[in-house]
Image: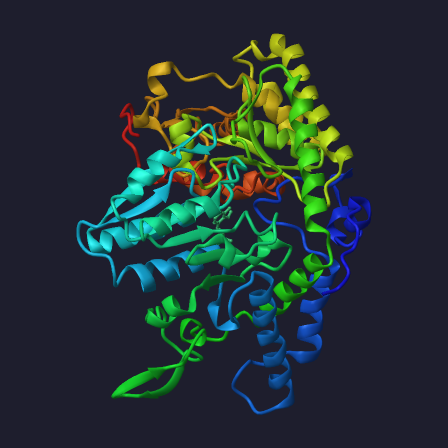
Length: 559
Ligand SMILES: Cc1ncc(COP(=O)(O)O)c(C=O)c1O
């Protein structure tokens, strides 16, 4: 093995070109590493080199490029097997990522074994990727799902044993919670499962980015991870499984590559691991992942993890002094990721404020809705660190959060002047840059008239937004739109204000003739708000257009 380099974050940062970029003139502070990590130059170059010099399909052709591509592709399989201490490269199946790896196990391993009335054991804090595939298979087989609760970030081992005693057909575990950062005692849990003769799948999506792992020592049966959270490319990941299990499992997708012989009277499948890899694989992704593993293997990962822990402590200590700050409990062991709330501030508004200062964090349910509902939270803000983050960046995060709270306190007098939302509305359109527009949006968000409490009900709730949004779709006596709306995040109230301003007072035909999306696009909000998913702008526009299309009768309340 190569000698391990020292772990100087300032030096390592230079390996990541994107980290020297600026967001609206401010240096990027990237604290959304649990969603995806940034890529070192070595990974970017390896992919570019592959496409510039070696690009060919693998395994099939008898020409030089194909041989080169195949050698490079299979080399990475061997490299990964060695890195995670698999017994052989035959135990590594390429997938698009963790999600696909879990679906593969659900459909190819569990489905043929799962009988009506049998059970699957899941962890309450699982990512949806480690819940929904099991729900699908449970439904297909008429099986039950048991949930192992998590309390204050900890798993109750006694409860775990009780649930294992019900002999579930599989225990789907998570190494590290992506929502809270909790690091679970996976080896111990695997031991309990083994004693109960229950096979275990470990979702390692958030584990491998922090620690080198040894799948044999861990004692699990399946381990899934994604390359993009591991400083590698998107669209590639892997499933590791014990060879004897893979041998017994049927292919789950059919096509080229996974066969040995095909005729219309039947097909003979290829051996391991190819029988699980139908179609042309993500060759460049595998090559890029290989470069990411090479990169990680040069690092002193335990030292880097210790530095990341120092970042976490600095952040939590610094934020503790911010009025209203609350970190969500993650348990005794926590990776460098924390989820938090600030009293009186919606997570989306906090994330947008931080983005305005070049700081990228994530707000929402983090694809862990069951956990959020057990914590009775609509969502949180999550800051997640990687080894290239610095203490200075953490200090920036803390001071921007403190500034947000201070500014909110001093603007209470202004925000209570509810009613006059025309001025901020005009300012949104007149703003010359994002900073001005952001301020006007926030004013607009606080001054839009609130709906009465009884109207903030499920009946008027608009789905498709991460935050809660309510729309009262009405027309006035003249058949013109007279809608009202509300949301629990200021930014969403601002977007609603913009939309209401566009549609109210117009007939349905006039609304349909407007290009609402274009009107909003002119404000250049998309760059900051990812309207396609996060804030539900599209859902709001669709609801208003659907209402206009329905040609509502005057005075009829529709919802
Ligand atoms: C714990 C966990 N599991 C699974 C996934 C799904 O990973 P992917 O979308 O790369 O398949 C994620 C992604 O955020 C995750 O954090």
